[in-house]
Length: 59
Image (spheres, rainbow, N blue to C red):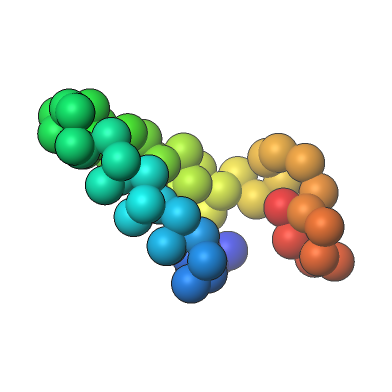
């Protein structure tokens, strides 16, 4: 089974997006963060989903 991990940069981007949206709409920030988790999690069960990554062996 494929393993999913978030890079430090991706985690920081995600936190920055959350903080920015949360300032105006905390519920929307939480919903978007959950959506990120859900969509990224699909890659575990469907590793061929999406475009090829810029780094060999990634998507």
